Length: 381
Image (cartoon, rainbow, N blue to C red; front, side):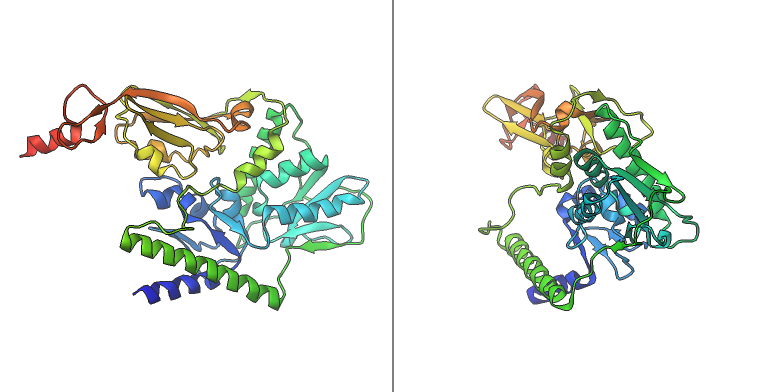
């Protein structure tokens, strides 16, 4: 049984191609009550499925739209991550007096125009766009050809959502968003030599080296998880803390020196930022703390009180806390506050007087001597 699971895990790393998956960051993996299905909805190939885990089948075309769609950083690429795309774009800007970097998809390649060709423009993340605008003071031109009938057509809707998000953030800094332009054709500047930079492919040796390291890492993690579940003991070196959303530190690093003007989002637009509040009917349970994928919520219990804290910098507006709250005490309000986003700070949302149940000795909030669960059991006797 153990050998079979290890082999299956190793084989998964081959079929997953270049995509890295951290399922622990997925709200839907953590609880079936989650309403988030962004990766599934935007995947052009229909290759992603989520049940108890995330799987990508062999229909995957490695367009990277899942990386852009997921605010929690569940997906990334081994060789075509955001920083590799930014590095290619920066090379274009180095000796470019126009300070223009041009992106398009494989269908949009033009002769005599230096550009970066992606599988789909839906691969561009807000971090890539904001990085190039803020750090390189460049203008970004993105050619979006007619996507009708394209097998990756869903990427167009994703791209427009991501571009809107990037412009929203740039406007929040007091800057103009016209540096990110969508064009039917590239503007008439001095033509280049027609250099087309595509996403890099690995040579044979690097490919097998990557596969070997990936299989070893995932097999080690599988052994740790299996041993832990069967023996109920911690293993030295096994993951004991929540995984980090790789997208958020990059964005924070771009914005931390910016103007800290607060903006409130219109309700019809998705942004991966939010604040939270807790109503008086909170029971003080730890469901929101345990299930929060990014560690934005923390429950602390001392001798007298149960306190629940919230870190706005880590929140991605996945709303899992709201979906799983047993008494619907917690609420999430989308907003972008530059001040809150750029400071890694836990803020107390609620402080509840704690009682200890006379029967089960468990902690609870209330005025009775026994907790609601024990009271329910007593009534059913």
